[in-house]
Length: 335
Image 1 (cartoon, one colour):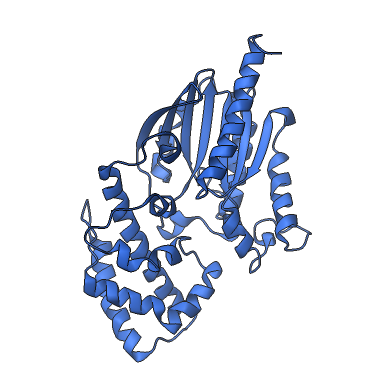
Image 2: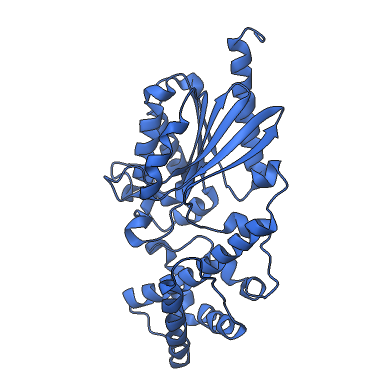
């Protein structure tokens, strides 16, 4: 929303994202190296030396507390580049759907020279690709189609969850974003990884609140898709939202299309009886979430890719227009 409806990101914002991007890079490399150990993939001797140097660097970075800045020197960038281009890492990268690797690993590692340069400033696409933990509650305000919006970014970690419930008064619309690619993934907090979020929007006539919700509000199942489904069901069937329109974004469709070729939806829903085609699996996911809805007239679902800002803007515009029209009908202004 900052990109679409505000003036993008400040230099201070970009500085924070720069650190998150560098963290994404070192975390991704470390994750692949650990996967090499798991799958007993042996590095060439010259690469093993680079691996030892990197792991010492990573341990130092990982042990830093507070606001310590990550600095990747030219020498370390070359070492990471050599590791990334090695046969062993390329082999384990091909198996990335068998373990939890950040979706942006290839994007940033292929841009290593650019993002480790001293004068690097993240681009819009870099920021869209970046993954980071959200702590606390952060707000931005903007106007869209003459409607005032307040966007609230709520922390996704379990320790943050008690802080958001007060935001749910007089909600007319909820927009819920589910990562389709998480159908075979475990809870990232179980492995101390960053938690993504899902976007909620509440609409009260000329006032909207957007909430970046925690991925893992419900902890009874380690599968991330099932957790998302249970959160969605709780929201959809809650008395707080009985008069609300609900819009579902099935997000990360691009990653889902690739991933479903190597994995099975049965890892999430064992009862699934269809084949592994993208079309059948997508339809099944749509139906599973739709079953949670009692009032189908107030429910809308879209398949999206969040890094495609034009697509997101189109879906957002469609959802907002529908709710505006509903509110106008409710007060007798429009038939």
